[in-house]
Amino acid sequence: MEFYISSSVNGETGLLSIIGRCGDEPIRPGMEFRAILKEKPREYPSGLESPRQIENCKNIRIKVQEVEAYGKKVESLPANTTGVLRCVDCSVDLVPGGWILTDQCVAAIGQGEPAKMSSLLQSLGIDRLSPADRLRLISEIWDSLPEQPPPDLTEEQGQELDRRLAQMDADPTALRPWAEVEARVLGRIESK
Image (cartoon, rainbow, N blue to C red):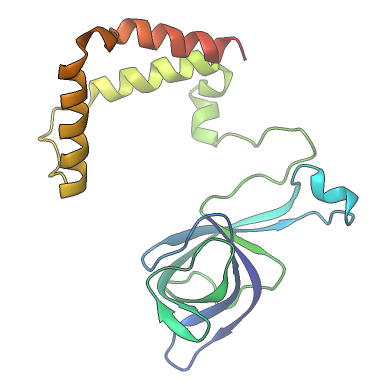
C-alpha cells in the first residue's frame, strides 16, 4: 500500500489532509500507514526501468479516517487515482511532498542489496536460515499456538467453502496429501 504525496495541510477540523496519488492498491478509511520513504532520483526516461532505490525511510503512524476524490467523500480511493486522505492518530504534523506513505519501513538500500531484517530476527539467528527453514519455523510456531475456535465466516467465505467442498466431493482423485504439496512448495523455494 502506497500513497505518493504532493502536499499536506492541517485542516480546521484537526485532521491532517494529505494530497497525492494512490499507488497500485486502493486506500480505504481505517487503513494505517507505518512509514514514509523517499526514493533516490532516477533519470527520466531511461531510469524508470531500473529498480527502486530508497534514499530515506522513517517510521511514522498515520491512520486514514476519510478519503476524498474529485471533491467528494468516497468509500475508497481506487488504485492510481489522485485524491485527499484525511488522517487522524498521526505521529507527525505534516508530511513533505515528494515522499511516499507506505505500510512498512524498508532500509535505505543500494541497488540489488536486500533490505535489513529486524534486530529481533538477527538476534535469534533467523536471518541466517534458508527460505525453506524459515517456512518450517513459521509452521512450527503456528502449530505451537493454542487451539482457538475458528472465526465466524462471512457469507461470501461460507459460499466459497461450500463451493470448494462440492468440488472436492465431485473429484476426490484431484486431492493431494499435505506432505506432497509441502515437499513440492519447499522444493521450488530451495531451487531459487
